[in-house]
Image (tube, rainbow, N blue to C red; front, top):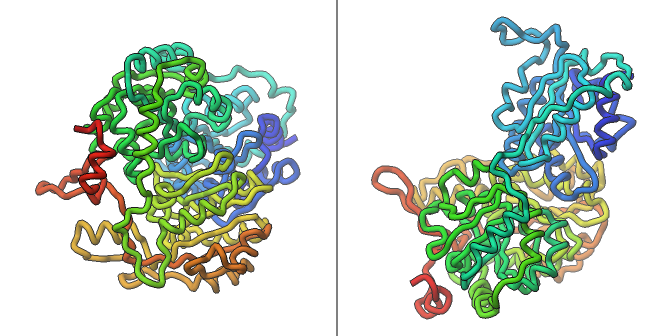
Length: 589
């Protein structure tokens, strides 16, 4: 057998079932090996393959996907996908082709082999593990490399395989030996879930207004398993964006998704808690607000994270840092019983019920309010739907502010890198992970344009994917920035300042995908309903006002020294009416 065939057999035994790829000469033996062993999904561009594999793996746990790329441009093209998975701490395995080991550049040469470029040097800083394989390595060593991507704090693994190593004839039995490398040893500060739960219980004891914030580090499986026990515990629950689908809005304990671009009510609830327990959230600046000094203004912060660096970064101030597995901790915590928090829960639910669509938002006639759209879409989506709210811009922030998620839905976004162009490729991966469920993509026209070539992948695979495009003639978030901070000095943010976009209906028709322009009352349209309920791909163009306002928001200002100063998370603009503020800011003084 060729070594490439042996490697792919190992991956099959490790649970990998799908391979995304762009064909190339320097990965030809790998491609030949997956051809008869995996479900192979060719994509048009490598970055789409990387994003699709990330979302495939994030969507469910029963099957795994990886990516094969060729040398040179294959590596440079996939860097954005690797960066996104790294910042979100998600598994992503990439097998990269490389020139023959004898053709590797040495002695200061820039290049010796055709298309040669050192992939591990390029992606090393944004991968959890990298390796260059110049000759066949034993099974134990190879599996340790792969497993490092999901053990401890997950992240991308890039294994670059020279062409002669891929094609080398090997005896599989001879490769069964070897000593596995310990690539991700636990921190000496790591404690068990039971010990972490005990420390949390001690922190909660005596508090009057505790909150448990569930992050993406808590799996859907764990959240579903402990939900009955959490209800008995009675402490209000919130989720981060990455943990958005761990709870439905109908959950009696659920009180919103706080975030810099989050829900005003949820932010106010979090700010009034006297004990915030963050499980599986790194509490980055998007979660705490840029003015992190005023995060948790009246409470203590307990943070559980597998990565001690996240606990030690200094923002926000963490009173009880715990290096532990969030899933083990939540399971242990759910068995404990605390005081009666029914009064606090009732108040938190009242505050969280503040309108998600700020009444002062302006939408010009002839356009659809994106907030109303999110509300309408929430109503027609079922618990079985897979929802992809792109990764940046107004389409992303509105969906994550206003989406009313149902228990059972899968919701995946990528906010760390916040790169445009993630939505379509991510939706492809999620749709292939759940072929029997409907996948719903909401993306801005600017982001969609960056990966629109993958409509070919959608059509060829006849995916049950419903695409909604916010057509606002440009980049809504950039336009807002230029309007707010530079007095409307617009440049490269819309069709009037240099951008160009296709005729969307003509574009979809070119790929053989039926599309419809939406208007007010769109959910009651027979034309829409027929496409929505169909099994194949369909696209819907949502006319969004280029001057649409996106409120509430965290207001920031430019200081005289050029720096930025932001309001705290709980002080969103516009200000609340005094009587409303008095009612929902009871504990903020």
